[in-house]
Amino acid sequence: QALLEESGGGVVQPGGSLRLSCAASGFTFSQVAMAWYRQPPGGERELVARIRPLGITTNVEDSFKGRFTISRDNAKNTVYLEMDSLKPDDTSVYYCCQLRNWRGPCDSWGHGTQVTVSS
Image (tube, rainbow, N blue to C red; front, top):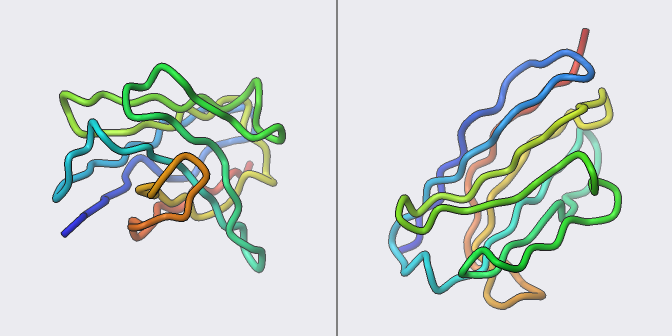
């Protein structure tokens, strides 16, 4: 059974950076595309970024381009989300997702990690 565990969230000031990690187990990580989603307070869950199994191809949604970077380390079964120039609007719970295929849906979700951007 797939297990995804996010970490790295916390409170950061506007303009700051955070790196989220998602440790995966229970499936062959190197063969699966992965994604990060987020859900702001009172809002809907939205796609942030995706990465193909080998990590060569990534897609970051337009709203986050230039600030967020997705990467993975298949030797560690871990996917990362590097977030720079954070804004208060980035305050959300960030979720890791095991994609069934490149365009989704998600077969498994982590429990999420809270990111709060506040001065």
